[in-house]
Image (cartoon, rainbow, N blue to C red; front, side, top):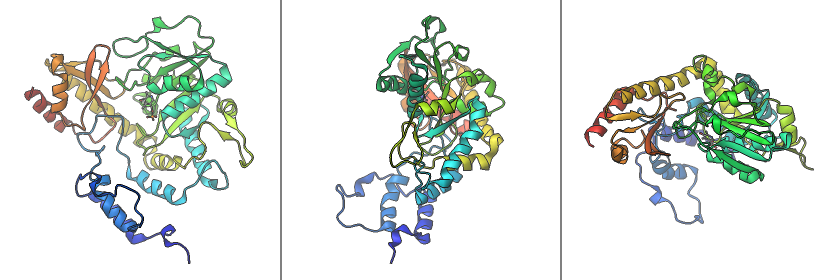
Length: 406
Ligand SMILES: *Cc1c(COP(=O)(O)O)cnc(C)c1O
């Protein structure tokens, strides 16, 4: 008699979907959960009912009309369905025998996307933190670099990677908007990996991509803004990216994927992968990169690209860009507010002209709408439009209310 918990229970699964659609009844935190590991289980269905109020009801809703505080997008339902497939199959791309199809799916997805970035291959990783580490590891092996040079506004994962790899970390000054000051670049980059950011986390700034190629290795951290290359309207804003040696892109940001999903791409993936491969007695094929066991995160991404096509994906990203543009205009037109810079990558940074009021204005706005970021000259408010369902009319009303309460 097989253990039925490893076999489909259609009713319980349908119930799980109902709970998900219902969104959980209340935001009650996990007070109802046992404090220590229960000795006796309550069964799958009861576990669902116990968890739904907090796990579903207590979660923020990234697709809500006002949600635009962070780089986390809502995910399309096709990714929910395919993630469920993944969980049920539990393939491991480390072993071709357990993932005969999933390995091909990942190759296919990389093959579809890499040409938009001028790259010839790569692999999937759980986030751009790991993508940046992997790329700089390849830089150390392939180009013998000894230091990592980057703008001080680069994501903390860049200095983290330098630290892990035993490379000297060399942060450089930026302009007011957060882009690397080219005049600050050292003259000799023959032993350096230069990291440029396409869409900084704080302000969405894009470093001067014409600097690509002036170091022994150039890596572009395009974690946030990379997907703009799939839009014919916005791709020219990232011109030059195709000359990089490696690129990081977080698919769980502007490719609308569930976490944890990202890509590390290489201009010459064969050589890069060789440099970061290890064999092992029990492995049929070499293990490439940082991860050991590795799930089929390519499946939801492939499904999304199939469902939407390039056009459908670009339309969602362009919608986000249009919302960011409208919001920036609203701010620029209000003499009580200051816009840091016109948004190039869907990130809008602004504050009241009376900067003493920055934090109270933040507190007066809906929490899912706005985050705070600290730049060299103090605190600013920040919106990141990763959500194509933002309703500008509602946002404008919330802003008016917030300003009135100051
Ligand atoms: C989000 C981000 C990262 C880190 O990516 P994760 O996917 O969160 O690991 C790196 N660089 C930039 C510019 C980012 O915005």
